[in-house]
Length: 484
Image (tube, rainbow, N blue to C red; front, side, top):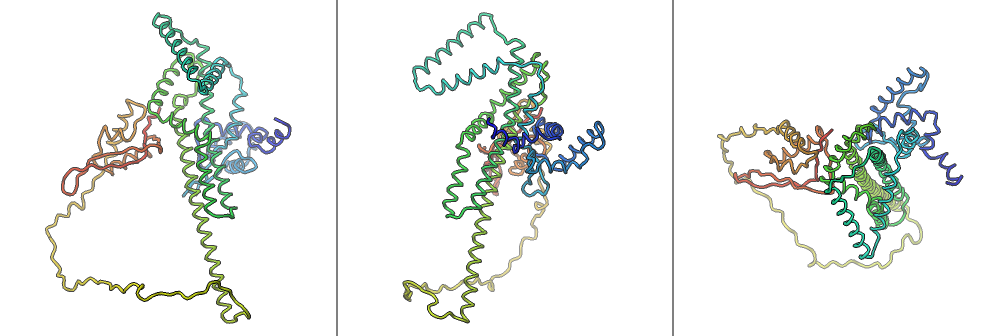
């Protein structure tokens, strides 16, 4: 927090530039409404420009017709420029339309602005208890003496036994309204901060990918050493503190029992009268699904960066091969030019010139190529009573039946995997019906794909001789999630 550092941040940091900007209220309010509040990660340029145009139209009617005179797309491109850095403008693969995403610096500035609003209730007890619990976990988790660990566990067991006896005796301690409001306020704040952390994790991965590309472009040594460094740095992502923390979070959240427990506790807490008085955001009820969507987007982005890096390496290899061919053609051209006008004196020195000896018996014998003789083959008349109706029988997958099955399964639970759906209602049309399920998951229902686990999908088919045969497909776990 010295003067030089703060002066540099004031000049170069996008968050500070946003707070100093004359258009800061417009930028912060609009980006909060379209990105932060609904937890949207990527918006197409046309959709974002349309939303901003509506915002500008409403502001011109309320303020002045000359307020914000430029088109909406001009403002978006300015906000995404390197001089501003409030939006990230990029292109998806095989798509010519630009996309926009919020930068971590902008989200930090918006979050700080939200803290300036006066709150009617500021709780401190829950934060103190959280700090105390974190210190306790670190102290116990780093204790190497088994006797002390056992003594602490026994102390905790005695406290639990005393609490159970107290409840069985009719004395049930409950949190008062103030304590409930305090804890819920902290829960809402931490849940929003967790969503913001995902965008910063993606930003860190993109910076690492950029450094790797720069190293490839400027590398002058051997390719083996370059690849060893690149692969080591990619492994360092998952082995870093950030990578291990993200993996632990993702493994905890992908547990079906954990998600059901979160849903049950959220429904119970949001129904409490003190919490309802705080008028919580409607998206709080499905905040764990927002975490899932943000985490899956981060994993997809990392996979896409790895794929693009592989393509970038392939392009570098192609350019290197092309450079070698240009050198060879240059050598050939100089050799042809020297043929007509050979230079005087020694033209080329060759070391260890010797005759190459090839013994006749070491050469392979000639092998005759056999040609098929069709001249003596008689053409037989085919069966003209062949039933060709099977060529016109098409089997259509009933998408309405599969959609009804998914809806019925999601009525009793908040989520279900594709493997469980096929066990409840086995596949009748094999692979075609399995592809139909995947189509419904991408077009009609909300799904989450867990690439870390594979699940077998088994069905019974009929072989050519009419006997039943078991077939199996292995694919990543697909989870259908109930909305609302």
